[in-house]
Image (tube, rainbow over all chains, first blue to last red; front, side):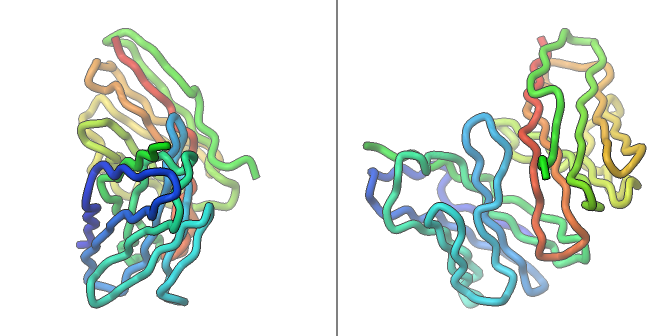
Length: 114
Length: 114
């Protein structure tokens, strides 16, 4: 069975600093991996996804993630944090079935300080 | 497309009352998922449907919870009778039958049972 571990339930950075949110997965099949963002009082929004076309994936709002098979990781990064990036971020892995049932991590709350 | 539409956005009800949450998936999506989100337990998958048929309801916490999908454009999640511990944000999501597609989430219904 697939699983996702997000290291750090809370991450705090200063505005302009590097954002690094960690995600490790376990999967018995080649994984499809996703990052979602949830702003306060909103639903989850797809940020980016890895689907085996390229290991470095670019998403919306300047975020990107790199798939590293040897490390079973899919960490999310952004070179320079903005106040508007404050939100909760979820990593998810597809179970590889035909319908792509997702298993979500526990989420990481990103706080951005001025 | 208007996205996944959930109603109501907020619901406050008294313990013991019946509560019905509604969801309209994206047209053409053949998978529909109901999630519950709480601070303590994070995102929990309650049930999902394929082509209006319930596939896995193992996440439904108790017999007080029931879900239906009478047609491709509408689903309900009912709690009867409601209890304070049911207070949470309930999300509906829909997806296509593709392993790398990901989910589109609604904005959620915030349920408070007093």
